[in-house]
Amino acid sequence: MDLAHEAPVASDSAHTPASDQHAHVLDIAGHYVPDLVLFRRDLHANPELSRAEFRTTAAIAAKLERAGLSPRVRGVGSGLVCDIVPAGAEKLPFLALRADIDALPVEENNELEFRSRVPGVMHACGHDIHTAVVLGAGLVLAELTRAGMLNRPVRLLFQPAEETMPGGALDMIAEGALYGVSKILSIHCDPKLDVGHVGLRTGPMTAACDMVSLTLDGPGGHTSRPHLTADLVYALASIVAEVPAALSRRIDPRAGLSLVWGQISAGSAPNAIPSAGMAKGTIRTLDQDAWDQAPDVVHELVDAIAAKFGVKHTLDYVQGVPPVVNEAESVALLRTAASRALGGEAVTSTPQSLGGEDFAWYLRRVPGAMARLGVRALGDKAARDLHQGTFLADEGAIAAGVRLLATAALVDWVG
Image 1 (cartoon, rainbow, N blue to C red):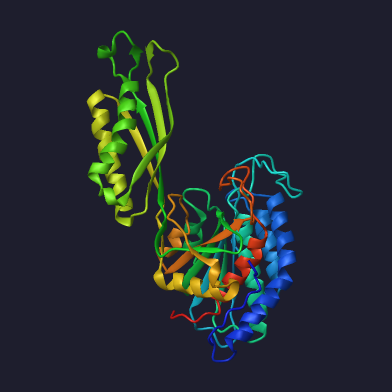
Image 2: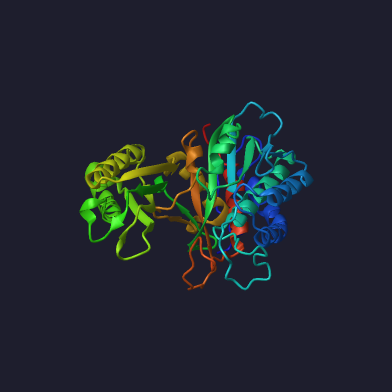
């Protein structure tokens, strides 16, 4: 992929021809990319877990300040907001660009010079790439502002704690990060998409993801006399098996709602009925209505099954994130930007994913879209995936992402 490919474009601005803006994006991005690669490597070597991204936040703020911008670090020290406001555009709505900055509790299994120095912690989801991309887009747009080529205000959001429930998006929103914002864009690394390519999809893109934690309590007893006690293991097994099946009859099956248990525990001896047991799992769906219905239906089903066996239970249902639903106009904006910045052949359709993403909370309040950013090295046949110690991103994705988001800020849209 020739990242310097330039497609014919129409005028985006009454002040500056789009071809000039486009050329400036390419030139300025090319100037910043080497430093952004080094910046990303530093983040990768020094990952920080959710709500502890203090070093990361300070490093981002320092870069923005050196570019003449005024980042606002959150009071807790993790995460920040930075506005880029051209003269005369103070009353226009913001386009927000969001990056998540936290790492995962995953041990890195790559032999890189800049591999994680923190035992058991790694940027296994590409948030270091996301951060470098949004930072780079901000630096490019700051220069375009000084040159009089940016006509709309842009807000950079560097969000902590995407990997937790509840996530940091809710904190940012509660603190006013979306005040004055009329559209928001984001990118996410895709290890199954070649570097230099962008995956787009209108409508539901990622799933709602909830956490379910169940505990059962009973008197316990001998396995020779189950009729004199409550057979807690049988009750637990029944709930684990029956609730997922019953959900497909209680909620519209077209919603594709799925309950999958990932942890089950009860007992320590083969001839003793235990007095306690537990199960934990996740519920996922691409459908907004199904997500809204799921908590009440799950509670009702568990109550009914537990009652049959005379066991007490506690069900903790945590709604984590809604589905990411990309707005059509925002997808069109990203498609135009990708074609102009990377070439028309760079744009591809991306499939839906049942993974959760707290960018969805922003989309519940303002329209926007998330794009998949290709990070697979050309010719790489290894089976790599997110949230694994072998996750590896081609750093050419940084240049592609910067050009994509910086160009998106220059494309006309109604806000």
